[in-house]
Image (cartoon, rainbow, N blue to C red; front, side, top):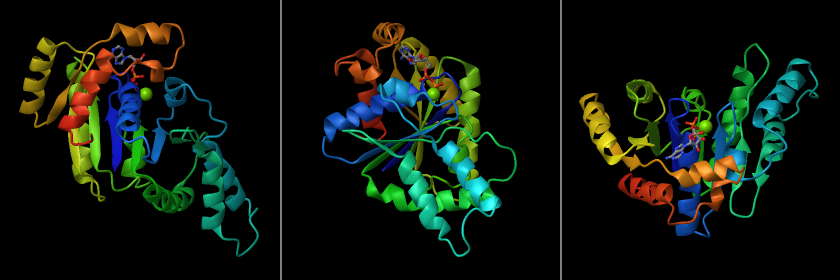
Length: 253
Ligand SMILES: Nc1ncnc2c1ncn2[C@@H]1O[C@H](COP(=O)(O)OP(=O)(O)O)[C@@H](O)[C@H]1O
Ligand SMILES: [Mg+2]
């Protein structure tokens, strides 16, 4: 199952994606999990409390330089080489693997690089029971087909109308994609029950489908204030309970 988190910046994509990792690990301790941080401003490693050495962005630069500079010997298997590079960026931890896409600094066309990256990703993803993708708002990696076959998109909104508008745009983008995306659910984050009622009504008028809401949680603020990873949130934390209900409604748990 491939799950992607999208939505306007700052709405809580990374937090909710990280909470999903925790719930899946609790529910399926033996499952193989891949977490993909696909936001160029990657902060999933901090939220999970782990460090990564390399990003795929750095590797893409490297690969681009090598193929453009004629650095690869003639007849060299590009797919095998890309696979080797991706495997280098893939970090294995006890409970999950983590792949940070990072940013590509350079200008110019990445079509050739993306072509190989796409093929390697397509080979890699079936090795996992769950793939959780923390996207940037633009859905770049999904729209470029680097991550295909997404089963569930969870689009996060906050109390603002702007976030709802972004959700509508994402929903349209998904409809226009060539690759199939299963279902898109909207989650309202950092809102009270009363606020959720208003957001939901407006969102449903715009054609959005809601999986529930997550309340503001001071415990999240406290941990972040002290630089403690959110993996330390106990199972009965408000955000974790709320997210469990959301994931159940969306058919993930
Ligand atoms: N329900 C919540 N309660 C408390 N803090 C939250 C909640 N949701 C998000 N936050 C905090 O708000 C900030 C932005 O969330 P984040 O997940 O980084 O957003 P995004 O990934 O969409 O940019 C983070 O500091 C996050 O911990
Ligand atoms: Mg984020």
